[in-house]
Length: 524
Image 1 (cartoon, rainbow, N blue to C red):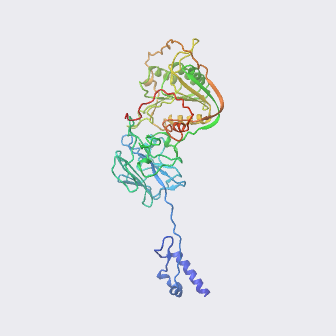
Image 2: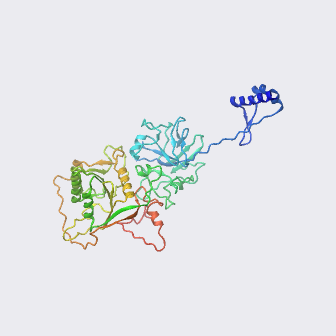
Image 3: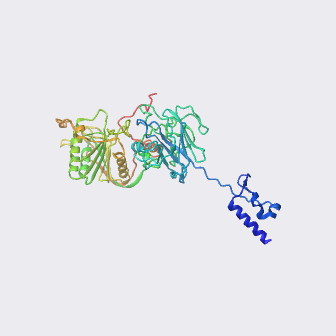
């Protein structure tokens, strides 16, 4: 009997090693049957008993991934920088081998040998051509479906057709099931996993469709919202909070695995408040004069010979100075700005216009409609940020007789580390001529003043009763929050709307600005 039992056990082990026929059974188990060639191993037992082995049904959890953004109607001629952003909704890294991208009848596939993965709760960009994508977005795509960069993995199959007017984009998983669908534009096509009309871009007023990026709304956990409807997307007209938003290539929002947030933080800081026109000039020129190593400036216009001279003097004493300035301000560039920039450039100041470079691809657009910021970073540890450009109107020269009239404005000068660090990041992202083609270096021959131009002496004015000549300086624990447009200015959870949502009965709001549009978008 012991010999028969050992024979039966060896036979069972051999079956397990060589392969066993499985017959259908109830879910969660399989019935082990004996193939004819194995019957002789335990002849008598095979005729008198039926032996069954129950195995667990192994199932892998489905990968939750969505199309988080799509760059469909590119501004570039030929649209070589088209791209799709895929996003992992799970907290575990997921491989994409065998997955496919299907758009309007054409499909590209991640090869079965692909090592491309979706990061946990993060995304990757797949582009038409990685080289053009990098020029538009400022960083390298994770994959491409048309060969352009040997360092970027290729998809196989045919290039997805991202039709500008409308269509269907689908993400297909390795099992052939549809993981996500985007129906967009003016298409009437439907899909089983999509409900309602197609998603739309926000194009009211002067906002163009060309160059816009379709982008999902994100929830409080910074994950894309996914209900398979048009309301998931940021162009949603019905959503006055997270909808009616637009996005373009090159913005800093695309560089982070999560949408960037500038939260309020508390730190020890010394902050000076300087008021114009009374006391701005003195505060700004003193900050420039005190610089030791570096000055980084971002301005809309610069029409101030005295401040230009102060910066030129700083450059001559060894301070590295970089200036980013708007290349097409309203009304054009004033001859006084040309003269001011020429004086600084001659002293060694690096000046760049936000303006499409002559060698940029056809159709290339600047990342921003204007660079309208007015801030400076001194020695990497002190921040100047205010409402005014460097002009006589904003910063008139004080004299013994008082202060001439001018524009009401304000500048903050602070060493609060969170604010300084974030503005250093913003400046580094904006002034990046090695990554973007919308920056043109100042050319004295092209951009300088006429040879006979001489700045006029500031006119004699009737002096005002200047109540705010002296700035206010406070050192304390301070809370700082940076609201930067276009990256996060309209985020309901982290910017102006979040601040307004905190007010209640008895609170007061004091607001001062140059003007407010009567209509946002359409006039009715």
